[in-house]
Length: 70
Image (tube, rainbow, N blue to C red):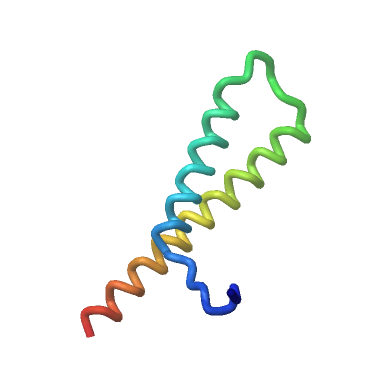
């Protein structure tokens, strides 16, 4: 079975983005001591990537819905 014919569902991408965003926010807010500058940078990059994934998934879902209505 070839993976080339497999289509990724936009809903899956949006759910992964939402879950990743939630995990990063929980990780950032539950620290018992202030993190170093490097850790803050890595966490912000992870949060930006998770939010980008969430927005991409939602955009793909919207595009699919508008194509169905045509």
